[in-house]
Picture 1 (cartoon, rainbow, N blue to C red):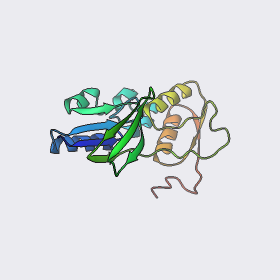
Picture 2 (picture 1 turned 180 degrees about the vertical axis):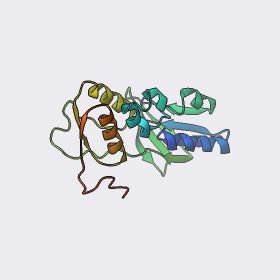
Picture 3 (picture 1 turned 135 degrees about the vertical axis):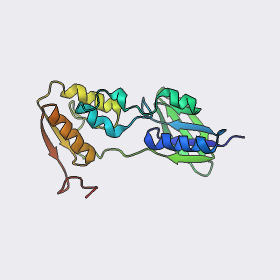
Picture 4 (picture 1 turned 45 degrees about the vertical axis):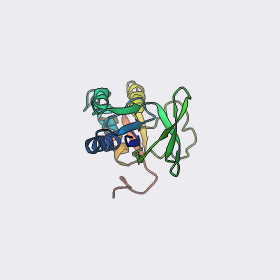
Length: 188
């Protein structure tokens, strides 16, 4: 019976893990799960698309669908892992239609990445307030700033500062707000 490898997360780390697993085991059943509509792209490049240093969001895709097919990787887009049972070695998943399924694994790899901290600020759910994590988020922001004159970026981490620079380069008066007393608080 082939080894079953489930990877939750399908961007840089997830695809690298899947590729390494495939190189060491050509018969393994390797499944990558992601909540997102696209996989195999570089989310760190989103601010550079917003700043027009990279011409389109499509250019962020490092691993196209053909790569997953060539490497015989089972890619499950718009699918959420809802429960992990490490004793039974199972992952419960749910796709965008609500269909639930249980996957069995021999090895489980978590490569979910980070998620932006959204402070509990009143009005954060209103129109015109965005969180930047995915290509879809980037596209919404890109469309929103097309006719904007100003922007506020909450968070002075690397992505926040790169996004602020992109906004300035696009001609927006931009203000950066940071909870902590310095920029790049997680890095310095």
